[in-house]
Length: 362
Ligand SMILES: [Fe+2]
Image 1 (cartoon, rainbow, N blue to C red):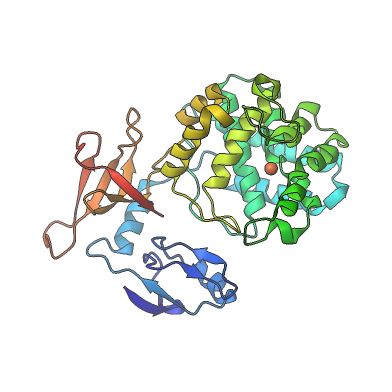
Image 2: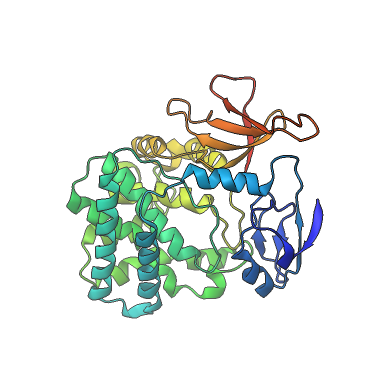
């Protein structure tokens, strides 16, 4: 581990210690890969030096080259994702004056997303590794939209139903514009009063949407996306199939994406950990059939994920094993001093049960 001046770090290097801004907000986790566009962000946050890992033959450049060659693809086009994020941002900035034409523009984005998803026969969803705190809400909204649509397509919803589901999913948290920003962005646990305030975003969201030309079933997603299958959720404490289908779908998508990402007050968890945790709460909080559908499309170890095996070896995921999603095919890097001739080898973890993944890094 070595300390480097921020301007001198080579993109692709592995960060050896969590990096915090001078305001105490976590900027990036230990084990992440350093990228060039972090520099201005780090400097803005008052960070001048960071610790970089030196790890045998697994140089950041090697990992980067492999990642590039793997051609990691998103389930929707990059342009569509960026447009959708922008549209949500614009809509939310309108505050109380969200109009039917804003909703119509969101509808066009959702339609584009549906077309792209229907075009793919077999899709798995992998989360992007880094998101900024400021744009969290918009990125989260689009991800929830994509995840909900993936579940909806698998459940054989028709195009019109998908449109209502996608719109409600992407706008599910619109009511948050009515909650004071200092509560939404609070970098600590909320007090019970603050939490009571946050909970109101479901009612606010429904009220905003129902005044536009959005379909009522879509607006109801804003109202019911925090209901739980056992009746312990809010806004109405509905249980089982009393919770509208679209809201049951969005509940799963919302929790999964939120847990997988850095939020202001919480660190993100690795996809595999989130997956296990969420399936664990499954029958209490979620509709089991929707959970199972969702599980079929989640890539717990997306291609390019950094992994650490029980043996301590570090590597990177090359491909998934469809039948054994917990045991992908991985490229393991050997420390130079251990084997100067061979730098890495590839291994199918489903055929080598002695080895398994214990940790991931991005
Ligand atoms: Fe919400």
